[in-house]
Length: 478
Image (tube, rainbow, N blue to C red; front, side):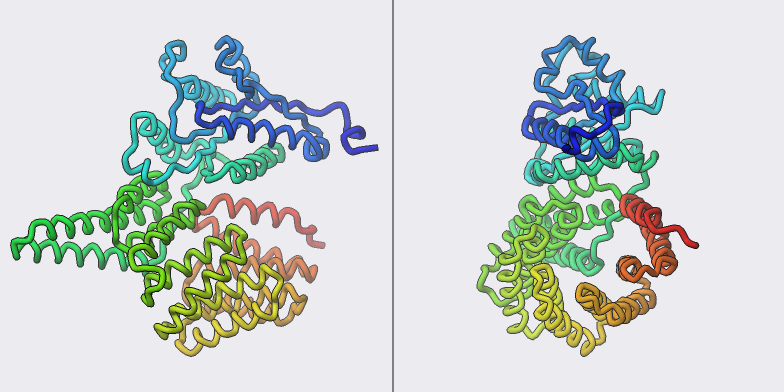
């Protein structure tokens, strides 16, 4: 007998309403596919059945009264937006589109009754379009910004349809289990690397000095170009500040203008750091290819090596490990010629991660040890902590648990001394996994609770909730 046939007949119905403008037909189909899939094993296990409410392609042709009835009876409302605000209609007044009317109706009902729960998924917009938006996109951007400022509606961004499906499934599962984040939502800050911000500030100051010098020398065209470079760097700096406050929509729009026509490699690298952290890998890849175009792929220069190194990380994140290894070796070759120990160490560390993902643990250990040796030689404590953590993961994978614990504790001690919160959290989580493997549940609970506390202070609510669920899954103490 199959799980489908043995499932209980008294399933709780969950009515799900999907709203999206016409430019998201692919996501509409993906929504239906995902919800249908959840009605299988997951629905049987949780004794629930998902029912579509206003989710098919004929929604707009139905009487609005019927659509409003669906909104009034749904348990979960899902809105997805990209570049369009929706087709303007007369019978949705005072709203301008059906999608806008449906969202505000569901939102008002939630505020009054606590139902339905609302999920919003925003498809990333190409920066070139953000830099020069038309009326439709301006409305969509204003809505995105209002969502972020209110902190009252849970939303996520995505780049491709497969990412949308993954995020949608994850959050519908969380909804069923009662694990969606509580309202109001806390802002999640993104702190970009200090060295990138300092490089942009220096580029801004340098461009300002150049503009003044060209003006004094009677060279107006060169002065204009320098002023443009100064403006690009200033916008990038403002974007970094916005990101650090959790204002991602402001950061996105500022960066879009900053990178639109810039040839500043400092600005492009700062943009890369932002887009990597927000999962906008296609844009991050484009920025690095622009750096390669500026200097030439064969040039032996730091920016070329940095572009190759970052492309390697992007390919690694995508799971394109052959490509990642090839590109990282190009970065390593340039840095070896430049005798840049710090970047050589970073390249070895990244190659070690690729080897580990490919199951080549000996090569991974060798690469991480080469990185560790260089960091120790130059007394770079942050790099030492990172590589100790990487080696600890390899030892844990090999089941060499005593050596793994030793490495994680070394990483923790250094990161605590440096006040490096992200490193401390990583060490606590690694130790937590190790202690769970060893059934040392009190120690696991202790370090994971510390990790959760730090994550909450950093404002990363989703990760703090994940740690909480992990803590709750641990066996109760005797």
